[in-house]
Amino acid sequence: MNTTLVPPGNQRRHGTLISIALIAGMSAWPVARAAESFAPKTKEECVMATARIRMTDLSGKVTFGSGFFLNEGDCTYLYTSARAIDGADKLEIFDYGGAPVTGIEWIEAFAEPTGLTAGPDAGDGVRMKLSKRREIALSLTTQWDELTAGRELLVYGSPGGTTRHETGILPAPLKENADGILLYDCKATAAAGGGAVVDAKTLKVVAMNIWMETALPEDSYKRMLGVGGGEGAAAGVVLRNAQWKRFATKDYLAQGKAVHQLRNNLELMILMTYMLPSARGLRPVPGDDFVAGMKVGDAIRKHDKDPLMLNLQSLNDRLSANAARKVKASSQDIYKEYLTTLDMILRKRTEVLSGLRPDKLSYYHKNYLAKRLLTAGDMSYAAGISECRAWFKQKSSVGGNNPFGEWETFPPIGAKLAKTVEQKLIVE
Image: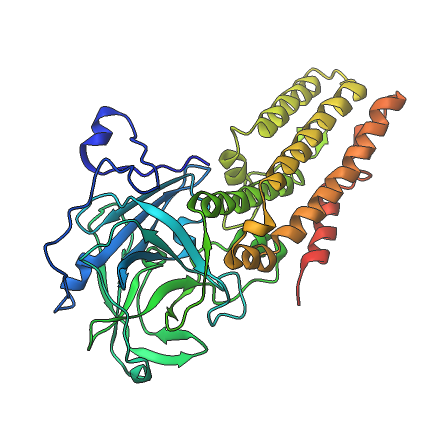
C-alpha cells in the first residue's frame, strides 16, 4: 500500500510529490493550533472546519470529496464518506486553509448499515482519529428530537472542480427523518459526499452527507461496475449513537484498494468476452456499449497498458497480418498465444484475491462486494474463462489445424458466455 499525502502549493513546481506518513509525529507541515477553542457563530464560519479530499485511483482517475472536523471530548476526528477515499492509490486531504491534514492514528468505519438497508452505499462513512486536537472544529448536536420535517439544514461540501478552497454552503430543508437517514432537498453533487450536515439554527452537526444510488439496474454488468450519468440522491447519515469499528489506517486503505482491484480485474475478464480471435483478428467493436457508461473502445483504452491487453494486441496484429497476406496462421501457435492470455488473467485474479482479507474488510466493503455482485461476477467469469482455457489447452496439445470458425461457437467465451453469466447474475 503506497498512499501519499501531497501538500499544496509550490511542491509541484519542483516536479516531485512529497510523501507524508499517515502516523503521528511524522508530519513536516504541523497544523498551527488556535489559542482558544473556536465555536462558529455564523454559517460562514462553519466553513473553517471543513476539509477537502482529493483521491487518485489505480487508473489515475482523480475524484473529489468533502469532509469536516468534529471535536469529541479531547479528540478530533475527520469525518468523510467511505466513497471519498475508497480505492485510493494516492490520497490528499487539506483543511480549509489549504494545509495538508496529517497525523492520522487510525480509521473507524460504520459497524452496521446506519439506516441504509439496501444498496451498495449501506454503511458509507468513516472517521479518522487525529493525533492532535484541532480547536477549529464543529461539534455534534444534542437536540435530536428537533430534527423534524421543515427544519432548516445546511450541507457543507465541495461542488467539484480543482480549487482546494472551494466549499459550498447548500440549503437543505429537511423532508424526512426516518431509519437513521435524513432526506432533504439539496443540489449537492457527488463531490459533496462526506460533507457536514449542520442544523441552521444551532450550527451543530446532525449528519454526514452521502451520495447514494437511488436504484440498482437489473443488468448485471451495470450493477457490478456502476452506472454512468451520476445517478444518485443526496441524503444524510444521522450520527446519533453511531457504532464504529476500528481499523489500522494502512489496513483500511489496503482493503479499499483490493476491492477496486477486484473490480478492475472483473472489468478485464468481461472485456475478454468482446475479444475472441477469428481468422481476421480480434473482434471488438469500439462503438459497442460496454459498462459504467463506457464503450468497448473506452474500456480498451482504460486498460491499454495492462500486459494482458498488450498480449492481445500482439495476437490481433499477427492474425490481421496473416489475413491480409492470405496466409493461413498456424492454429497451434494461435492456440498457445490465446492460452497464454487466459493464463495471465487467471494468475492476475489469484493475486487480486490474495489481497482481500475478510477479517479486515469493513461492513461497507463487504456490503459493496455483495450488492454490486462483484464476488458473484468474479466467480462466474473466472469459471467461464477457466473452461475456455481448458478447451484451448486441449486443442494446443492434440495437433491438427482446426478451422477458425469453430472458435467462435464452441469455446465458452464471447457472446455465449456473456449471456449465460448475465442470466446467473440478474437479481429480481
